[in-house]
Length: 461
Image (cartoon, rainbow, N blue to C red; front, side, top):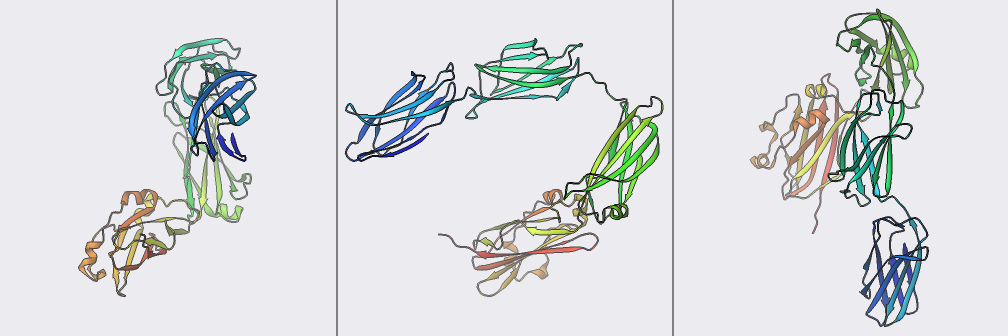
């Protein structure tokens, strides 16, 4: 609620929440302005259906925003709520305002997390209850927890479940002849009730499982896509049986449906079956391999039981072009005499990171040149990451010994190999006018990409 009023001699502002909840501490912010009066008494009350539920008063000074606290009980009921605020001075009413409020019985946020979405008879159900107030503070009172079957019959209950910082972890075991359907976990905190539904059904573990393995991302410059297909019993022994491999593809840009590319019948001889998909097949059927999603589905029929199980795997073909850029605004700003921090990232064209095994074989080189006010250019030592990684000094790259002392290498090489982001730091001279930073990335096959960043000096008082 926000009320702003300007009269001839009295002006006032009232700010308060629009919604009331059980147990809520309701604050009414009030400020009044008067040409002659310096102090006044503010009276605030909240009425439900002509019955005063809570009220309070406070002496305030003019031109001062003051809060009048009003406390609700936990037993308040739905109805028509009205906020009344009056300003008084020496028995005279300076201003009066009434505003309609809304009632919300939910004063807590209750979340129930279960160990799994579907259970079967005889399994143990583990769940966690998280209860927070609207101000995100934990609810530290007891909870009433009930477990109800599909017929709303109470199967288990906790009269006063203890909470630790608003969290309570409980468990129960389903009966061996549990009724299939949707069971309920009912949480009652004071007058608020919330429910979480879990599904109980009769199902049986499969005799074996089909595992299809493909790399999650494939560069379009690859000639062959390699994967494996296998069937495994629960005893981890490989399955013997007849199988069918189905390869389909679709374009990600238009969210198209999958198109069947190839179907092949194979026999599994108690070991994983290798799969090789030529990239030429995808290009011939899809026109281009870029931004294509592959789906390899396998269906295996076990010889003895004749049971058939399916499995599948998805893979995405990404552009092979590399991209390198500095993670900062261009041009960057620096303060002369203070260290300069920067990051450079190498990635594929679609922003996917380069695999670690490729970064190890490639070379990343960062070159820094400081342009001084005198017109002199100071070349700092190159920073090399990846292949031939070293932090040695190349004497031919220095103009003076002072530049050696100004350069500090604090790169985290492990982070670069994992994420493709190289961090670097170097010191600048007090007389530095501008900086030129170049990054050159050379892959194992000789492909090179480079980026350049200019930095200008910045002075602040």
